[in-house]
Length: 245
Image (cartoon, rainbow, N blue to C red; front, top):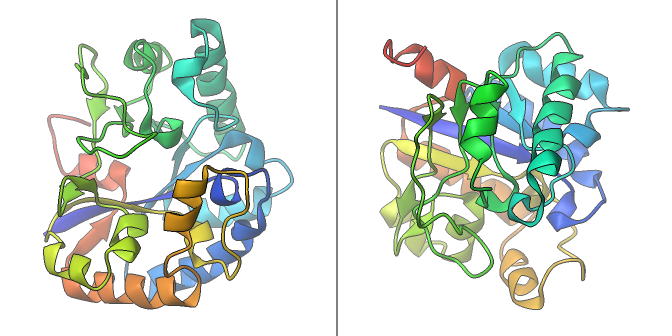
């Protein structure tokens, strides 16, 4: 069974801090040890000054766009959304890496997102989730009328996204609901010793504090072992589907 694994590389806990970039080398080693491939959705403005790190990621894994500045796309006008897409793609491709995938910040899509992605030659998008959570996932009227392939995040338990954040929150009960295939995502900052500050809403902050740091590592190791599947990135997943790429 193949499961897509994606890593959202963004500011720490929705802030402008970037200490979590220091977690990535350890994460890459863990992936090597467990024969895991993944897609790293990177915020474009984090690449400048960290080019060596992102080149190292791209040696074995896919780099894709997570916008340029991690702003909510539904609060931007059409021109601003297009700038977020184009600027982030350019930053990634400065590394001599082809960027074919996109994920909207917070999984909140702009109504013209897919048309813009098609215009700028993206192959796939991974911004859609069937899940429900306050302040996230406003995609209930989603329709894909473009040629862009949608790779949604899987849901599990009570219609929650298959993300390490929610697995941590409901651990150990959540381990019993893990699927054998689908699309799972994580954030490097979840493995940080320090939890979130006051940059995020209080209710999200309290939830995010649950079992982060060393506990998150242990839980993630258990997840990888229990799912017992082949983890791949989005690009590699699509390569096996001849009708897509």
